Image (cartoon, rainbow, N blue to C red; front, side, top):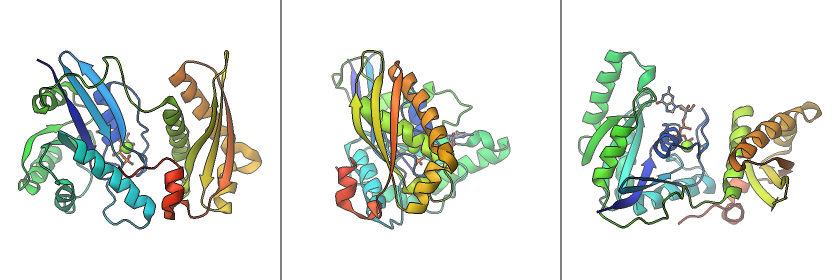
Length: 295
Ligand SMILES: Nc1nc2c(ncn2[C@@H]2O[C@H](COP(=O)(O)OP(=O)(O)OP(=O)(O)O)[C@@H](O)[C@H]2O)c(=O)[nH]1
Ligand SMILES: [Mg+2]
């Protein structure tokens, strides 16, 4: 008998979803940064272990008060992943306030999948504070039918959570070939690695207004050629991304290139262009052209 199914990782921006997602699949697939809205797409990560196939879906953090089309598209992606899921895995940071969580959970209960709670950031708290907060969060969400709670902070092993998830997956043949890790393309992850570097090096509102578009990917015998456009919202942001004497773009490009080479196991020539695309976050058409999907 085999089990297989979809598990959506849901929660607020910065809760630790991608960190947990990468630990669960045992690969550094999703971008992680200390800034919110790092994840902008629903990203599948497949783990086949023994007779269980887990298809985890990392999702963008839920924007409770959307201010533009982009925010709505991000939340829509989380909702679609939640709807598709057999298990909703709620990642709850013990650093974040509890008060708005119940309404967030309600928004996602469109059908009745199994709910699991996973705590993060517990390692940053004193032991007494940690257990007291865990108890408070469980109590605050007791009106929802959670099937279990696990402390999945960085100092905790990941296996108990995998076991708990497996119990909740339906009996099913495997849905993907064993050994397949994701259904997204290498091109997609190249864009993510570049965006991760943008997030790590840019400050204030600049990273949120950037988007990456891979415009060309040419495989070569020795080296792949990748051309990417970094869209920014304003001319001033373009100057910041390029930096004095081109130093910032060089730093970002070098770092991203190393990560991309590690991913594809081959040298890469990364050709970066910065373009002002005013208002891209407000236009559904532009979002669509940049690869955002609402279902
Ligand atoms: N100490 C500690 N740090 C964590 C833990 N989980 C995540 N982090 C850090 O918290 C920050 C946010 O983590 P992410 O995994 O990017 O959070 P996310 O929920 O995917 O964020 P978005 O994609 O922006 O919604 C990063 O700096 C992580 O290194 C944890 O359990 N303990
Ligand atoms: Mg994320």
